[in-house]
Image 1: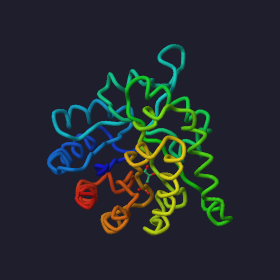
Image 2: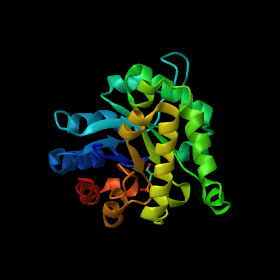
Image 3: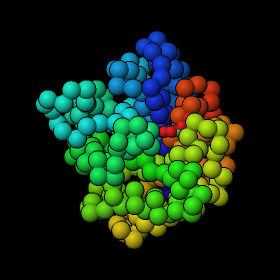
Length: 251
Ligand code: 13P
């Protein structure tokens, strides 16, 4: 049995007091749910606030990105060891918004992954096709290229530590969710790729999350699919009630 994960990607939202309020609220609700791992990923500037708000509860802290160098003259960047020092256990890597706006490639995703794993952070690596790619029938090809570009040549024991998030770009922030069948198809394909590359044990254990307009109303049906092990939530993670409802659906 894979323990489901519900992770909130707050993206570039919220100030100190709102973050404090949201995290404390979630500590009261999400912190009490058993059988689901809950991770909050605020912006760098809010890591300390959220860390203090959830400390001592079961809610984990993650960042939205990292840079692969450990320290030095890299203005504006944050390293894996800095994230650890700020209380993070997880980090999102290769989100489509980073690929789209900040030139992230499969090769740079891989470097970030290596550095996260070396530091002992658990990476949540994101993959997903654009609408154009889906419409021309190349979804499978794109996902396989992203996942093999990022993960191939890892040792199975390292691959086993990684969480994967399938986020179809056309479903992010659009209110247009993939149907459970559509999402399951891609999740299955990812698990098959993991089995072929790293063996059945790794594939059976790896958690594959769905992301893209997941809301309380669609969460249960998506997460009931055999290969969907939770969600990476954007918009709905900014509201205590909605995010809590999704966590309850995962349970
Ligand atoms: P939305 O839930 O707002 O569509 O965002 C999904 C996402 O990108 C999470 O990383």
